[in-house]
Image 1: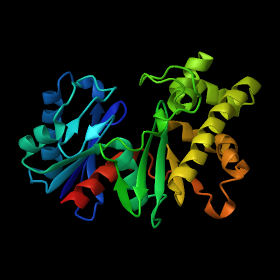
Image 2 (image 1 turned 180 degrees about the vertical axis):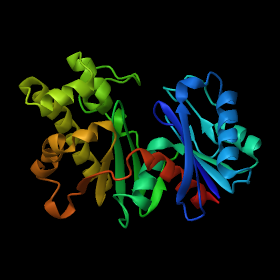
Image 3 (image 1 turned 180 degrees about the horizontal axis):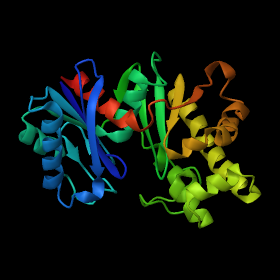
Length: 292
């Protein structure tokens, strides 16, 4: 039996799965419930004990936000965890508590793995997954294998610079894709929650429509860069802002179609993610299986 933990976003999700990665049961709670990492580890251990009825797990995968060191199972500097401290050895801590191997990876990377193995990218060789929500992250599959780079930080698409000397990003750089096109960037620019802006655009508000189109086209520029850099078969896009898929799709793919260099024969397909909120857990379970 395998375990998976999705630590991305405002919720923690835990699930157990059969050896074929089919998820059987899960539990969730709010991330802000934990003030210390030890509290998080204890909750996960008890959740697994409840879900497995006391049976030992073969292995557990964890998808966590921010830069990770998968080799050491360490969270380096995740920006949105209330119980975070620098260089947190989360993998070894949980492994000692549940007496099973634990494999840590970036949550966007594991989302890419999930969509490749079980979702919109099944059967392709090369894929990029993008989560487009309050922030922007991505994961890369090359020749069927997850690529995380020399330091475990490959796929930080949100922190590629698309507007030199543009707005300040939370990472400290200026003009990042995330600062311009993510929900947080839209909110900063408009003074309104991104959800409201998208709703107004869908209802015909011209100003909101222009704001959404601008964010989508900026994301589209990033897709051109991905096409030229990685030559993927498919770019899969998930996250909260894809709830307005029909609204954003024309502006999202326009830069790809307009590029004189990204020829039609090598233009990647751009598709919406299929796994929804399950994507992190599916990827975490797959990661556990692939590392055993």
